[in-house]
Amino acid sequence: MRAIVDQDTCTACGLCIDLCPEVFQEQDDGKALAIEGDVPAEFEEVARDAADQCPVEAISIEE
Figure (cartoon, rainbow, N blue to C red):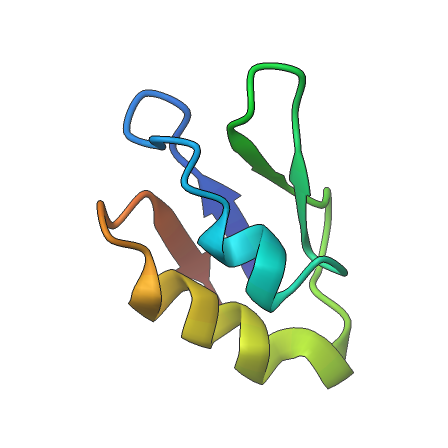
């Protein structure tokens, strides 16, 4: 699976970064950026949780 952050929607709240820093990283503007490529299997559940908890639904998950 892959995680994708919509940069136009992200409000830089940091929730996903706090929940799953292995997958989501903060950019210079404070917005989140997901790692490139596939999410490691051990972080898939928490990455999905971060996507579900995003207050502006900026994170999408591709299987």
